[in-house]
Length: 334
Image (spheres, rainbow, N blue to C red):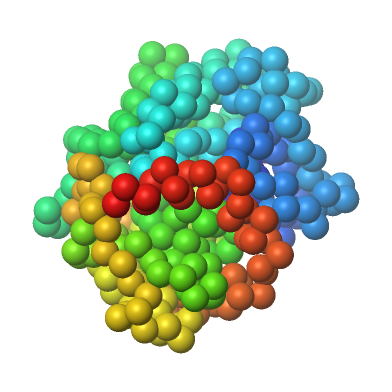
């Protein structure tokens, strides 16, 4: 089989490619990535000579680039390509519309035009909006509250509309907060770990009592793979880790794992505008297909800290240039 993975140089996409090449010997991967700031060639450098892997530089919003990547045909498209960080969406919402909605449209048209058997849209639990109590199920209304989650919800709705209108063979996964190796250091866990390694403070938003469900990236990748292979076309599947924690709890775990103290290394900053207080997803639908997370949370966090300690050559170049400009823009006024 031959699969097109878009956004495969990013965090979840690159881990998905590794899992597939390791666990599905009959699958070849074409990776289409625009190589924006978070699309890092170093994520998959060790696979460059793998005969089952090919990289194509291009944007999913470019019809010609998508056609070039598809080439003689693919059996499936898995779309990871997206602008993904809420804070950046507040600074530049238009970029999120271009990739998350217009780029999705280009891919759906390619599926329709080329008769591709399966298209999987990788989405997020943030499309459900703030969940005061209980858990979000796949048929709950979408209530996005940031430019990022609104763009992802728009992409999801476009995907489902193509199913209703054209009978396009689509699937959607909505994952919870994901952590692990190769995550760009603007996100909470890699930002905090790398700051703490360098004996710097970490910025905790507001009171730090926002709750997220945490999912190891390999569990997320296997959940997506499971839906691609076993999901019912036209359906949405939540992928969650079952590890709800406040941001303050995560901060304490990372401080402990890095040997730093709360009093000297935590700086509370002004909260994000419209910051959702809590996310929680019900994963019974995916569990019924036979998927379950494998990585215990404490083990996953400990291993992630070790990974960033052992891979300074990966993240140090990223925390310069564009990142420093973004970091200053994001936190100086707070």
